[in-house]
Image 1 (cartoon, rainbow, N blue to C red):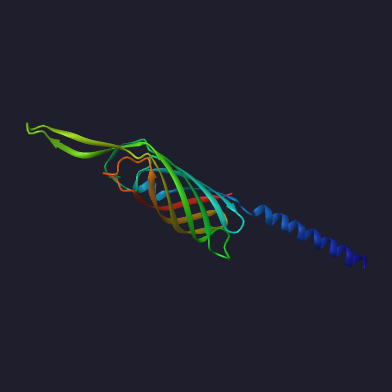
Image 2 (cartoon, helix red, strand yellow):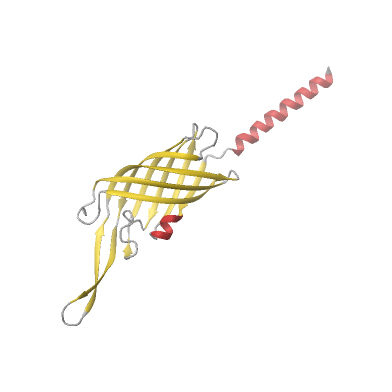
Length: 192
């Protein structure tokens, strides 16, 4: 009887210790960066995602040298644009923890100006001068996105996504850029 009681107490303490370690291993934060925007548009992005119960999360993202969609990415001479985005991700997997297929609504605010090299202007006297065009991309937009996330070793994440947003105001360049902005991304991140 004494041996059974000691064995039972040892087993209970092992189970409780295992549960504490399991709770410590659950990661609730993730930091990532959009490598697609970095390569294609030259934008630097840092994203923080707070993971909640029920396979949902809140994502906030800041992008430096942002562009509107991918307009003029090959011709940008100067870029002072900055954007801040908030999104609420809903993951659809029942077996994976904050991974798999997801959907999100989003809000984005952007401020800044982009100067592009539009080519050369010939003045008729044999002189060529560069022609630059500047436009601001200040504005507020709302939209949604879809994507998929993979988790490796319960630490690293790879996320691909596409999103579309509509400009809701502030953008005064309707004659140059559209009101609808498509974006794509490949985020590489780490959970902690």
